[in-house]
Amino acid sequence: MESGQVLFVLASAAQGIKAEAALRAAGVTCALIPVPRTLSSQCGVCLRVPSKERDQAEGVLARTGTVISATHETAGGRDKTAAAKEAP
Image (tube, rainbow, N blue to C red; front, side, top):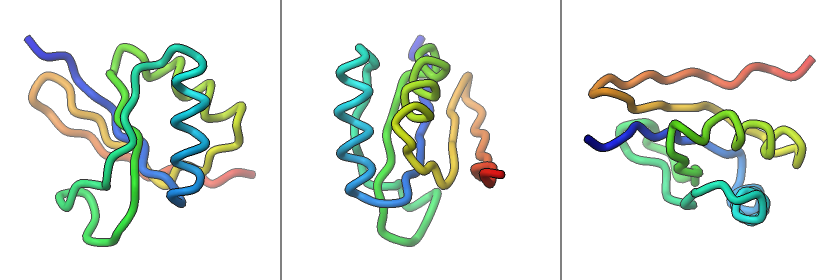
């Protein structure tokens, strides 16, 4: 059975490139991909990470100051989408 994945929708392609490098350096499996049309009709990029590595990825992204517009998780055949929380 295929495990779920998390998509971190990013604010810019430049942030995506920086974040991808940071995740790979931390040993997190990831791929920088276009945002699927099912999530947004606008152009953009997101990072695809296995669900089992979500916590580690979130820590790395927070430490690097990566702006996440939204997250989308696919697990067990169910999809969940959440908008990013505004920073205080």
